[in-house]
Image (cartoon, rainbow, N blue to C red; front, side, top):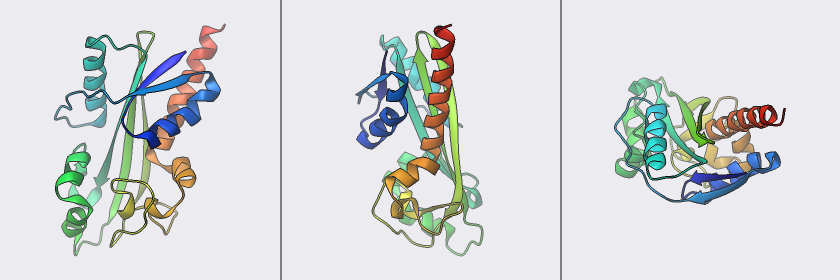
Length: 189
């Protein structure tokens, strides 16, 4: 079976392939775009994109969306993380937190798929804190300022393998793989 991952991020593609190839899935990719709606949740954004892609005739597809939710900022930037990263960047988030004691944050990831006409939605979350300054060169996005719970280093300072084992996306991909495994087992009964 083939699954088309809608992404231009080759690191994300490798992560999906690592989890799904053992299930007998061939994971392809397309950097096709969809109009990202203004929404209150990652799931709403993912569902909207899935519908747009299905309306264009796409089948057996998966897409994900992630966001950084900073507690002292009421969950900002959340679903607007990509836009915020492009406009004010990590330094802007650090400035907004200047002088605040609460530096708690979490990353969330929502994966949505349409496979054989059935929809799958799964989530992953990673709790942590925002560092005082950017540190590290691995990863992308807000990784240099996010310290996962139980660590003293940012996502950008740990190996990709280590990050994938604890990250919001890694957890969502594992949940997605488990859901697919269950469905594939049902289909073979």
